[in-house]
Amino acid sequence: MKRVILGLTFALLCGFGMRLPQAAAQDDAFTLPILTIQCATLPGAGEYPFDDWQHPCEPAPGLAFTVTDAGSGDTLGSCTTVTSTAPEPQSSSYCTISIDFGAEVAVTLDASTVPAGYAPVETSVAVTAPDTAEPDDNTAARFILVQQSDGGPTTELPSTGSGSTDRTRILIPW
Image 1 (tube, rainbow, N blue to C red):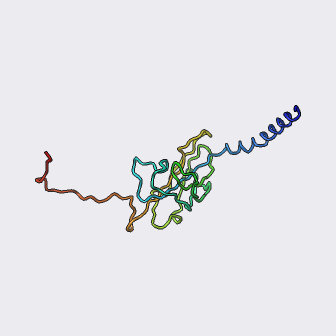
Image 2: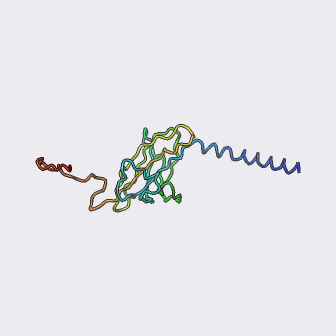
Image 3: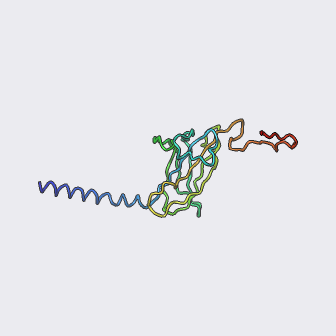
């Protein structure tokens, strides 16, 4: 019995020792998520479609992105979004790029990969990675595509005109 325990202990120690360099290598970089959704209309200022699983937006797979260093302009990587299988909080499409902790990057959407009938709200966003490996659920590049109608995006405010100039017909309901 003593040999079995010693054997298992030795195997566990060797197994952990072999995994430590791999784990340390993963801690050298931050995995930047790039999230994408497509919506029929632009979400309002108080709406958070990436966090609200009941929001009517849909995943936007197949979008290509390039990540560049904000200072030098060097390309750090590229990826294409796939649909997440997680149903909550909001189903979205995503891809990831490994960047250095504390890196300031620009994430740019390849406009040629945007599906017909949609327009991106932004084609490039700036992101600063956290300085440490501590979890930071808020660091991500988020892109929203908005469905276009009648040749123009639905992101524009409607024209309501200047209103009536006849001030003599004010109705008071009391």
